Length: 245
Image (cartoon, rainbow, N blue to C red; front, side, top):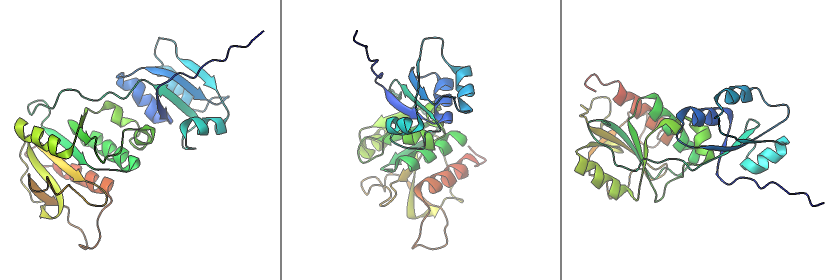
């Protein structure tokens, strides 16, 4: 008698306790399968409480097998497959989404995840990322965001130039991080606004650097700079604390 082998469901990888929990809380996409150890890790009980009513394939594996599925050992003994990440289809509206964040060329998935985590924590209404020269929202991104990316409205623009054009047409004031800009602590921010953070190495694209007010976070020396995710976190905190916003 021939044994029928179960095929692994196709889908996008999500690994780690918090990313899977936040995926289930957000209820934006479907959980297809879970791979975990036997006995299950402590975090699995939290996931079980949020499990959907529809059937989800649960498969028990060795830790090294989970690492092969996830492509990393940073899986906390739980790996999931889910339907594709849900991007916002319609562009943002100033009245209902007055504070936006745009990321121009962030290439490290962990930096991207950390920035999205800060965006959620500081109450950003929406995030714009670009298809060109940018890191994707992958499993490592979700892990670095502690799963909070699942709750954000994220718009995928074809390029930085296209995104800036849409922002200006919608009436957003642009505040662009740069080395020689105005002190970010002293700027009078006007809603609706969008903070633009550039890539880790080269900063904001030259083609859009003059499209808004250039701002700078004070630092010890011009020869050094903050990590992109740290700079984004500081900048978002500064904006979120302005009395007029």
